[in-house]
Every structure is written in C-alpha cells, then in structure tokens.
Image 1 (spheres, rainbow, N blue to C red):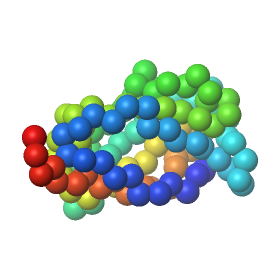
Image 2 (image 1 turned 180 degrees about the vertical axis):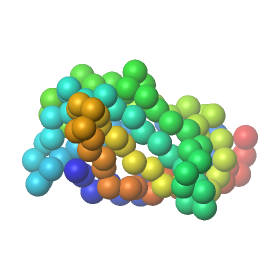
Image 3 (image 1 turned 60 degrees about the vertical axis):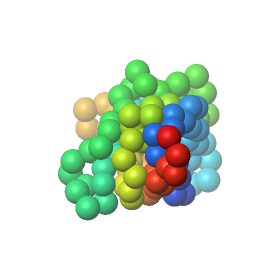
Image 4 (image 1 turned 30 degrees about the horizontal axis):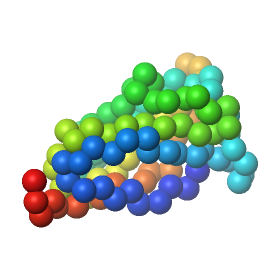
Length: 112
C-alpha cells in the first residue's frame, strides 16, 4: 500500500476533500470493491481512536484509480496534538489490506 506523509491541520477547522492516492508498487491500486475505514488515535494511546471514518464517509468516485476523498469535520480536529492513523480496505472476510501508518498533526489554533 501507499507511503503516506504527515498530514497537518489547524485545530477546530474543517478540512474537506482530503485526497489519498493508494498505490502498490508505484501503480494505482483499485480499491473500488473494498469497504473502507480510517482510524486516527493519539500517539500516546493508539488503541483508543480519536475519530473514525466509515465507508459511507469516503468519496469513492475514482477508487478504481486508487483515489479516495474524505472530509474531516471541525469536531474531528478539535484537539491539538500528534496522532497516528491508517486506512483499512476490506475486500473479503480474509482479505484485509491497510496503508502504512501515517502521522496526523493538529496544530494549536491561536484564534477562534
């Protein structure tokens, strides 16, 4: 699956249409048949997600080309800190793929 960079957001600000391009071996990886989920958790408590996204939250219009979009709400980004996340693709009961774990940084907001 894809190598993902650090994603940096401002505390309390919604971020729409975050694009992930999923590749394998440098080529787009078709995820159109997958049920997709994403979990993001504090780096100090990886088993306790701060927020999750489910299949219905993703725009899969271009998933056959490995491109998926997701929105993060202001509530998702309410608490500043360092987090880890990954995206899971369920193709069948025994065919689960995951991205590399990526870092999410939510920076303190100076103003409301």
